[in-house]
Image (cartoon, rainbow, N blue to C red; front, side, top):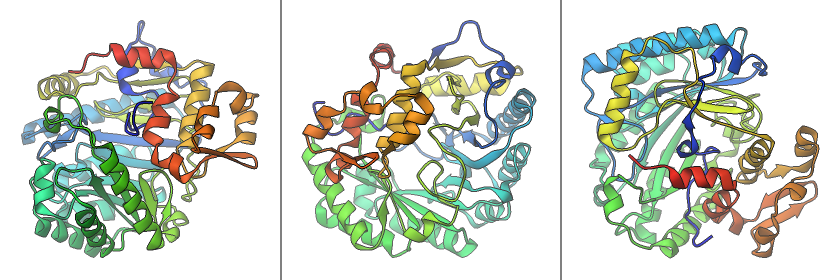
Length: 435
């Protein structure tokens, strides 16, 4: 661990550890022995109106209407194949991500909901949708509200125009405020606002300014993201060391939100306590009223950038960041007619399953319940993994039957997570050629 910002562990293993599967297993076999009582349905829309300087998501800009239509056609074909392969299945939660799902027009969003509705009654489960200031229009938001959306997440990043420009996100605060006003006017149980710290020129004062501007909307959730400089992104050409600044801003943001009555769920996620009991919060983020558990339950992903998780296989399509490669993968996807096999993925053995459970638990404030771990794996986590170095640094505490990160440990989540990757996963990620 050479610094606090080694990588954001939102899933394990990372997609750069996936490789082509030979032979390609039929989805019917992949899911045959799985518990399908509380799945997570995820639909990926790989389109945005612009590419932000910090973005390394699988997305393209400027997609013409004929491409978005063709993409929905392919998504429909994939849904048919996956639905047939799954057999009987129940879903506990759903999400539309990207990209920017609201890049789609209102009629296209209707169709997207129809496709998702083939798997679950969207009005009966939590449904989260990501949006942006430019695409959060009243007609789109109305469709989403009428089709059962319970959570809208909007990427604001900064309420100061000059900071937005520094992050290569050319938006105006007036546009952001108008979008937030429309979201609140249409009405969703949960509003999440994403903010970024570590932007060039950002100071503690300007960071507090953005935090207070966000708090004025009383969001049920706030995500505070450290800025990363990533390969093949606009900001990746202007790398510099700014760990101390990001840590300072993180602590300011954390303490500010805690002082305003929010509770911390992870290094990034903060929510109003009432949102924790509403059943509308982020899936896998703790007690949110849904039966889905990200440590144990499967995920069904539709779309060319979506992952799917079973107990021992994670799979998706090919992964890329560079604009040309992303376009080529999307073009291949919209022409595809056979979606009945898993093509690119990672098979998890016993050690990898234990690591994933450890990571998905330890990086949340709730921590790792040792009894649940022993019940699932038959061993104790500290017998399986050397967590002593984290405790020696003051980052880990043993709270009865729970292993939990201290506040300083949470601040170093992006170092702790990657440090727990297996040698196999690290080798695959190191060998991956960014494209």
